[in-house]
Image 1 (cartoon, rainbow, N blue to C red):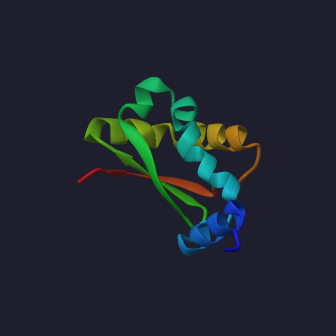
Image 2: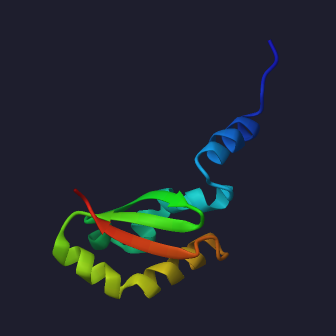
Length: 95
């Protein structure tokens, strides 16, 4: 039985999920550091689609707050990834 390298398998899976850049998925692991402990308790990244990061927020008040913080959060993402992997960040209220 031939083994397939994990990177090749992961690349195929991510391609199916429309994640072209493997580096961008680091956002999920680094989110607490990017957003900060307090903010991360109320919002979590859910998916990346065509360079747009979708973040789910648990409360309408926090949703209003993070919209004001959007530019800062985007800058922290770029800094954490050390490149411009995310074009935009969109926040929405968890249903």
